[in-house]
Image (cartoon, rainbow, N blue to C red; front, side, top):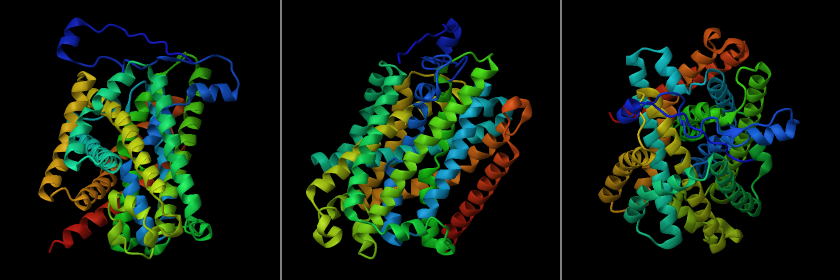
Length: 459
């Protein structure tokens, strides 16, 4: 498969003003040609790729802290949270991709088109904060991975993450299919590492499977915080914007109803397959935490560095402990952070172009976003003297914020895709709409509960 890139020239005045005219991520929109009349597997291969970039957000460093920490603190109890979160993610990503393909607008553009300026502005601010929260996890994960592998001081590692913009600039020159391939390779590294570590950890699979059924005691305050952290780290609000944009990278005849139906069908297949992979990785993370560390001194496991050390500590990890195991952990952490960097940059561009109709060079966008995200990490590092525990606490709180921000993306997505006027024959089926609204209401209620609990704890 080769990239077939063509760009329509923008008007000179628009280029000078930096206004975005047309599709988001215009440089990659409609650049991957889809062959006609091929079989199921060839169509699936042609449409596969965007789902991988979306799935990356469901296995970033934020997931590591919440899922491994959840397993270490509560055993297999929160397996049901990962399952439910993954099912919600599949539903939401299906709607997001369908919105982009059918309307040729990403979620940010649709929000700007179908809501008032005031509502659009509020949603833009919340979404930008969600991008920052996601970026904080990438910064912390990348900096700690550099420290573990190469002994680089945290403050220096945090500063070095600013320059990962150069990596994305290089990748964008290679074509979108190359970006997809690199992301899939990095996902494979993470999957293989944790599959190996879980196999030798020998978790109790009977208990794990039994806990796929929700348990009432999850509403305990500490468990609720961790559960919402897992939801925030699993169901990522910014991914809805990203998927609605990159679902438009495939080039086909949009005036042909059969081609449109084929695009929606195989984009959904791609999304669900990749999200099943993300679900497996998140389960592996929790299984690893539960199998090796549940019932032990979890205060010693509160950071990536502690986890790295624990994997080679016979008293904590038992007979499976080895330096090789901990090195694999750090390599996977670095791969996860770099993957999230790629998708985070693309999402930031989608949101800026879509909400405020402003296009800026990708390196400017990435640099501004990363500097804003690095700032609280640097401040936290300086105040707490480079304490990794403080950084991990900041990371978990960022994931809880993502869970709080999620309904602000779910509500407009559900409204738009449930509108016959906007979606035509591709409008959500009634059961899809009901599931989306139930998910939104439940998450909103849980978020209100945790905010109330947090406020009450201050007095």
